Image 1 (cartoon, helix red, strand yellow):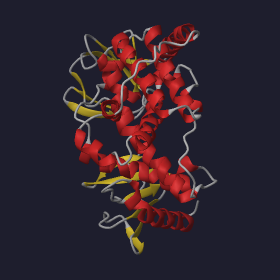
Image 2: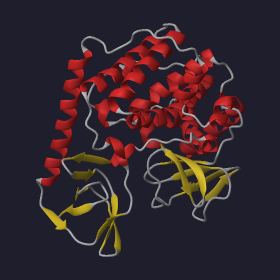
Image 3: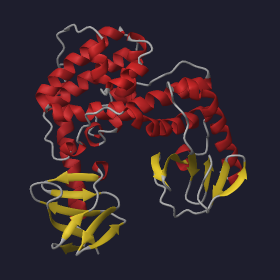
Length: 369
């Protein structure tokens, strides 16, 4: 995509978002956004840094590709929150409805801080967590019921069945673990809900969720636990649309996760739900694959020539989605920042560390030569 095409795309996205803003969520307001790749940035809004040049109206361009933009998210950029999107994720065939929905998704993250749930899950609890076959099978059962809902089963009974299964999963895996799902369903699933509704408005169609990833049971469901929560969170929002129309403002004042809020606002009827007959064995296989993949990744990293540092080491930040843990070895799959002998060092490639009682109790770090 050349610069002219990217500018036109940014303008079109901005026009659609401005048109849809009042319908996206009560009180929602767009934030500035940037579309970028490895060479160019096209920004929409005002008050951009000096490296940006105004093209026309609110459209600005910069060729400063070393400004730290990474991924697709809402982030603090020169003192304010903006939405950013790496256009390389869109490929060559541009779907305008998809593009508008994606950018709104990230804008919504900037908006969410106004009504965040007060009880957030600790994702680090999952890194060393030992999954049990029954807990995983119960998670699979929840997702099967969600899939049925998307295919047309009764909304109220579907939610009641999910709630019954989730209560059993909390008992099996622990409330701390299920709280992580609730947190991500609210943060990411709700933004996904806004995304699909916005895309549908651009297409002039009804919002549609595709259920294939709900019942695709592979070890990826355990590895990429954030991604597994997008669709369930959106499902709960769509259920709320049907069961408690106009729910958004009341939920926003509640401080609750979307699942807990919906649980408190619908009747509770037991359906005798439990794991599906074949899921226990499938769950055992998933857990085995999950643990084997972690071991292989760490063994492969440790097999190369490494420099070992074992004194005066601190870790400056941890991203749970950037980490694989197995037998007291933590592999950082991408960049990570340590403080070694008092000096901060950003290591822009995979690195591992050995830990003691917890992840921050660093015994040694292993850096490729």
